[in-house]
Image (cartoon, rainbow, N blue to C red; front, side, top):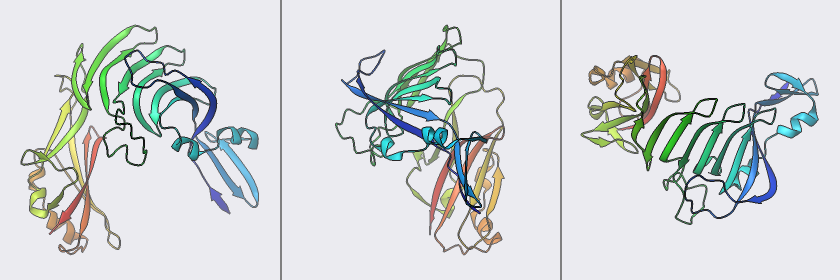
Length: 285
């Protein structure tokens, strides 16, 4: 039995050119509109017969062809106005994008057509639209400006304010726990894109960043895991407070990994068993 399964988001070109819809000033003058289906389809060949499914239910080939992927179209969206629809052609989201990176205004919608969330990502004012490097250059889905949340009737619930990817404030503050990121630092500096020694791992400081003053319903855990080809996986779980008791050499030796071997670890922070941030760490000797 030969089986190929695809979970896809289908992008379909519409040859229409439109002005980007925006509630705020924008550097973009004219954008093409492209339609994208947020659906799950699968295709498999069983005993020489093709079987097509949409969200787990069998469909015809013509229906499958409507949703099948075309990643070349996605790559050519840079920038464009992407409109995401469900299988019933109900609009879910529209966003100024470069491939799958938000680079401008966006809106999310309720099934009744009312706006659920309106906001924006940092616009690319560099003039460089090389989509392969856009994330590295800091123009991929970086929150900025005012984000406003609405109820199903269209009434404003609350707003959030961002600046170049950094959360500023929530108005009014909600009485619920909301964490927008986790800082992982060594001696006060971010460890992103850095290699650490084994001794430095126990010196890491893990700091959840909250959107408001509410700290209710917090139960943080840190999972530290090593995976290396040819060896068994090994993981240890800590609280944030006792993470500095970690013994990396012991974690390695338990599965027979030599300490001098170049190794990568993952560090995942959970709140009430829900993953909120994961880091990949390179260990050097």
